[in-house]
Length: 367
Image 1 (tube, rainbow, N blue to C red):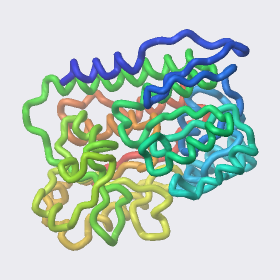
Image 2: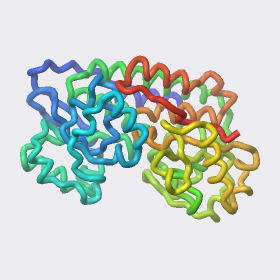
Image 3: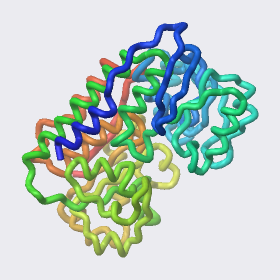
């Protein structure tokens, strides 16, 4: 297994020469398309607002690179947005084009802004649900580059950071992060090489709430990282894609040994799991306890044994999924992963890479 992980990283981390300020930039995006820009981009249309976190790994003032974006970052991660506003108040001046890739994207307005490049998630790629957006942008002469931190983050994170680094002429910074990411993930793989054959059953409940059950990742997205960390996600067999929907009856029958709920500020009003910037440990644990106090959950082995954890949802679909991988590895195989320390990794990310440092509790144990 460790050899396979190393092979993935080797494929995604091949070095490329840096681009000079006035030199054409050739980018091979996540779909394999070759896109040529006349020079490194300084005016980016960002179709997934949360990708500002990826840009903040590369540039000390990522806000200055964005001329328009969708509003998902501000809407879904208000507390992290507040951290960015505190350090980079001009973030409020970025034009917001819409809230998602579900038809709310005003293409005509995007064309009027005249970005150097549009960086789109793969839901906008050919075959995706919003692929017509990319076609219209390209027809108007705006280059389009696809990245992916959502559908297959395990396979695509490093490559997508390298693509962004290439687009903005910061290959060196992208390479430094790629090396950091690769080293940390390889360390997990190395520890797993000495773990026995048992793969604990894991329930990841995304957007964990006190009402319905249960939103979950499929075999893709966070489900792939569960598999990498040595766990058996009970929702992976339900859907090959990034998301799945589970019934309570299915969850009870699968009887997971480990429960991990994801949440954030977007669940504050609904009573769901809040975690991340702006929330203290007592509040997070109170919400997490309420989530697993729903009817039927007391019968789960994970709850009975006290293996209940919380994870900040909005690190999953960003390059910070490295922190999620380390937290998952610790929860799934605690003995083998005793020297894996996501807190130390976060400290190093803040010191070496992030323009806006992480502040808050991003993972937690109920007990």
